[in-house]
Length: 127
Image (cartoon, rainbow, N blue to C red; front, top):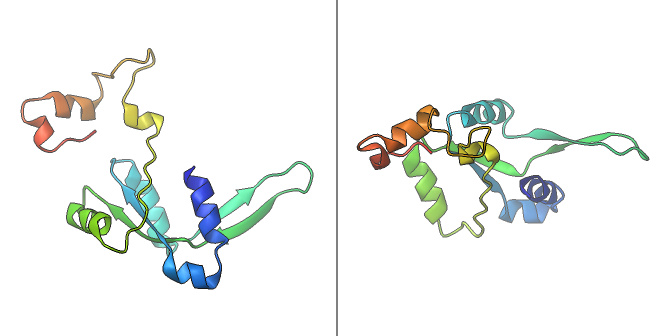
């Protein structure tokens, strides 16, 4: 779903692009990789479409206007969420976010889960 939203925003008219934009938000430690990549590219990225009939095509998408990494800047993240200009909040939770082991159970060996289960861990949860 997230890719579809970004692609639609990339196809927006210049007038709509002025009114709409995406602020990405990272919550987990591994989100720093995406943050660093997007920041180094002025939040631009390439969408590659593969089609066995018409061939591959690539285009630059510029719908991401900003990216906030919550562990480094939680106040800015909350400010963006509460901003009156924020019209849509869309969440994507991937399998990494479930913290499951190979059997589908909560991964109690996961350092982030251990942090949250420790006394006081939920005062500043990591998962």
